[in-house]
Image (cartoon, rainbow, N blue to C red):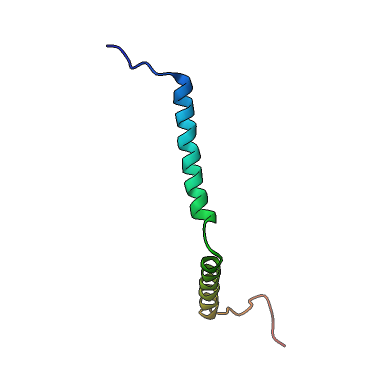
Length: 67
């Protein structure tokens, strides 16, 4: 039984290339949006936040006494 012989330098370079490609893909997803897409996402988040606040029930302040 003999193992496959590999060149460690080539193996390390290949591994580094794969890691850089993964990072580049993530950066394309994170930063590769147009201004219109960013503003649309912001508007949707703001609308969702307002809808959440509108449905909030106010609790009476328990520690406060009314005169």
